[in-house]
Image 1 (cartoon, rainbow, N blue to C red):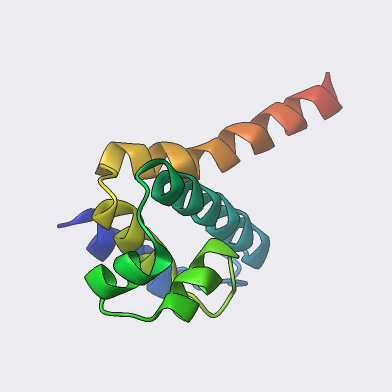
Image 2: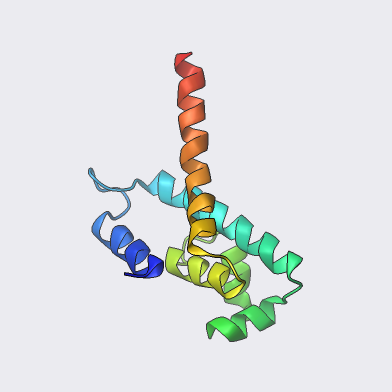
Length: 112
């Protein structure tokens, strides 16, 4: 199973706000991290929003929304954008995992 298929399945079966699934805050934080990584990677690679949009079969305004972490943009599209810019599955995992590591560190310091 591809990473994007896995991500889509997790988001579908553990929808935001469900008791056993991923909460809306966690999804929003992951979206923000993915969006920042997309913008940073696009800048480093010197790819315009127009060019990335063409590769994704989307529009420049949609890429701008992706980079702004707009909640109407799917996590799958953010991941597709990162992959189109050369990110590996491991890199995408580290980006999303950064949120979890920060949350664990904050929880540890509160208890400490």
